Length: 70
Image (cartoon, rainbow, N blue to C red; front, top):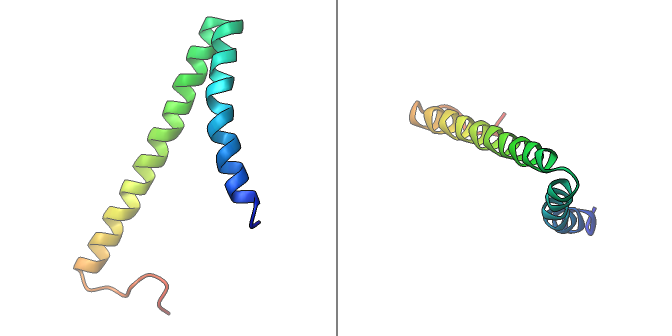
């Protein structure tokens, strides 16, 4: 796992633009669909992270137990 994470991050960052380029080259609408799908995934991840951060702030403001404490 020591080399797996950096390799996955690097290959994903290279592969996404290449895949989108090939999608546009082969069939324009396919590339557009790929861009929209990746955008939706990104927006969903950002939304989930913002919800988690808001819940954490509310928990800390209420004086709850810190995460990971049993």
